[in-house]
Image 1 (cartoon, helix red, strand yellow):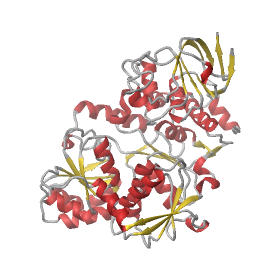
Image 2: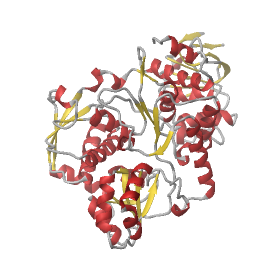
Image 3: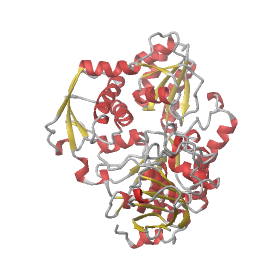
Image 4: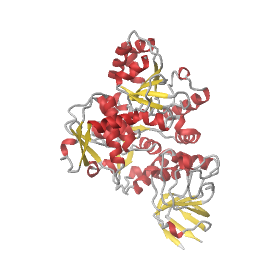
Length: 400
Length: 129
């Protein structure tokens, strides 16, 4: 693997022990994946933030990198934490967990990393343009960056994303290269998609179909006439969760779709296929036992929060209802008065975190959400049953 | 016998080989408190990987597994070295952040449990004595 003289200096320890460790990680990955060189990156998104996932060992590693002089060389943001950093007491988080979570955040801050804890950095300023090389962890954001923005990133793990932040480099392989961004399967939509839940359902159907193949392929979706940013972020989260996908093309919508002809091999998604995918997550029949309602996986946009405020105005929820979003988007909601409307209806803002990464096992029995990704983790990680409903009906469920 | 492979993580170590033909998931598959393999139905279930030269084809599972190796190292329960047929991200990153020597592209069927093995991470060489 070819290294520039600056990269060789980093590897030799001339920029300090943390940078050396980071460059060791990157050169090893470059070796494994046969990268010919490093590529400079302009943006990083780091996973491995919730203390629930990191544990004491992960925290120790981060502290060691901070103590070793590690400093982010490019714009770097963080994934959701295990709690609302400013308001964890109201979420029922215990003090020990909170103290450890705060140590994790402090270690990242010491390294010059922006401690906006969110899975949607592209909604508030970590927004790469077409063709930029970046190093992002967080599978839903990786899929969004490659597909919707046309930026280029592999699906990084926590340590490799941190290594990219501290060096401003990533090994040039996989989705950084033109030849690996070609579609391998046409997906023809013959079903109608009306809201975020439907796009999540589409991600389940397509993701499962591709996951079951020997060779992973990038799908080329046809027959979707229009899609909003909110719908695309829902689709990205679902495709990544159910298909391990880091990229798709959508004819007429995503920027690289025009470069390719649709592949010959075609998978048709009928209305029945879509309905079955949705029903497979909507496993809880009665509304009486739904005791947890959550919107914001991925984190809600200001557009979605505005909708929540409109539907909750003057009403009162009867179930625990978490609105999960990023701190910057919450501040806009504060400014516009949406926060006051939503909180006076009895819903709770769980900022910086979400129902996937917060330590809530055992606290609830059944979750209602519009997110296919949230359904997966609610069931696999927390053993909750799930209702998978359209966005507006999730709000109705909270009021019921 | 000398086996030539590829450097993944630098450092030298010697120890008794512990060999499996199955993949290893460090996150969830190895108990970080005891260093024992806990994955149900695994060939090495119940055995400790501490201070052994751990030989397996490739890693699997969650990327958080890199941090499990780091935790094992801090507790003195890490393998002395790791030898793979084909290393992947989780094992490679885990070895690097934990200073565990690691070599891959080794024909691992030539190594049997109980053999004395030395690993030279820098040169990518495994020697069976």
